Image (cartoon, rainbow, N blue to C red; front, side, top):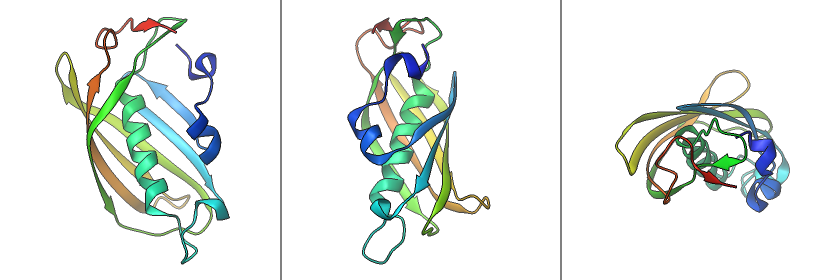
Length: 140
């Protein structure tokens, strides 16, 4: 299932990130940092960074190869580490599924600026929604 078939969520439209790469166990999100993404100090808000980590991890767990079908997860826990700052430019959240069972999955993501500097990282624990634990997912 291509993300384009599903369409962007409201929150994705609000923030403006895009899914740049998606395959089983791996996802990359991109965001062009704009003023609306910054905090009072003029740097990328930590909440935006946490959102990218959460979302990229979720995508890395939910790739579905069957057209017209999707897989979904809910976040059970998310930890984030903030290691750098950025004011503007393209950033990427690179996520991978680390392990998991039939209902629970563990993922990790790193967020980099355009020069490859690590801005943050995080780990998440996710639960598949009913039907999404199967690779063929559920009807869209």
